[in-house]
Image (tube, rainbow, N blue to C red; front, side, top):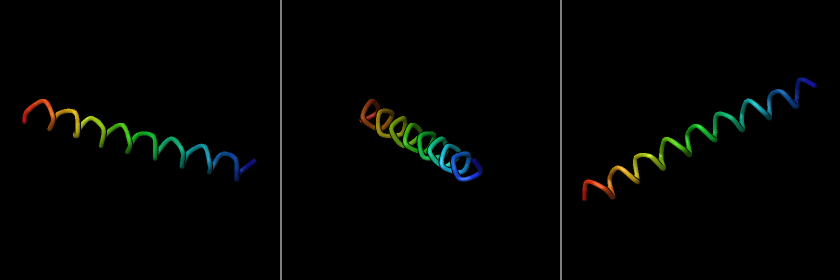
Length: 32
């Protein structure tokens, strides 16, 4: 159960990072 929670937390963190990077790329594409 603890391992599942750890994987879920890790996935959530990765998802947030990916969305943040995607937002930066979209912003840069819009500016340039």
